[in-house]
Length: 460
Image (cartoon, rainbow, N blue to C red):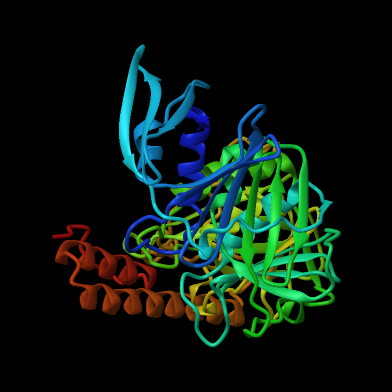
């Protein structure tokens, strides 16, 4: 009896490991192999009820059914299409044979006694769907939480009538539209990584079916059947998406490529939230601050288009980078609402960080690059520096001119005091975190210079 090829054994084991949510416990379930009507079906079911199946032609094979220990897959798997056969010695004993390393190999195995729970379910009626349903299930699964809370956040929602696939962990939500699904109700299925596997992704023929207990997704000879949940609660992601956003930025693809390269290098990676500030003010600027050195680094996206009033928002750079990688290049900002990134058929919803994380533009713009062609986004290191001191008269009459504007001077003083307060807050945070004294004192000196106090240039 032919069981499978060595490649099929390798792929089946790899895919089945990605059908399990969380950390697997206990022994691996057996692999059921049924030969019927010149067709071979290999099936395994996870403890959570996810069923993985693979079908292949089996001409001139007699009808049979057996339960094979899952460990056999590990022993026989390989990168060739050499067949793995099984020779029965008794009802529960057999020998598995295959070619490995140019030599014939054998492995005695103990077969399990089949029960009713091992019966392979009849597949439902399947309907063709867009291949992108695999990407939607995979990416929405990545957006799901590991654990449930008030809502079933560890699952993916399939909205049959609307044709949506949704995943969220409560902070980030992905909504993928445009699918024609063969059912009309809304169901929840496990969030799995199997839908991003190469054996499925490289298949063009995609189908979906529904039974009373499972949603079946077929990709060529592979099928994943997901147990459905209809009673658990799930967040209404659509309700948090603003209908109209006053400020919109449409990113140029070339800007996106450059920004994705620079985002991981911007300061602030030591923070758990990895904050960056998105500043939409005539142009799009992504900015981040170094909490220790007090420097600001920003990237100006000069090719991108902006409409609407100026807005700033602090975001975790990881979901922002993910949105850009998914092709969500239209960014929408609404005061007091989640940040929205839209692409072709999909919407990523990101909860902004605390407004206190917003980094304002640096006071000194003199550190911008000399090349002002504005053809590519350019990361710039802009360090805050002390304002220039007023020239002393040394007893001479100052030159004539317009008298200083007291309002302007007051504004400068207010800005300096606000900046000093910010640095004082950073100092308190640094002391609480137990950072080195030298870096703390450097922060103190930088704050004092902002107030134009006469101090020595010698720092400890």
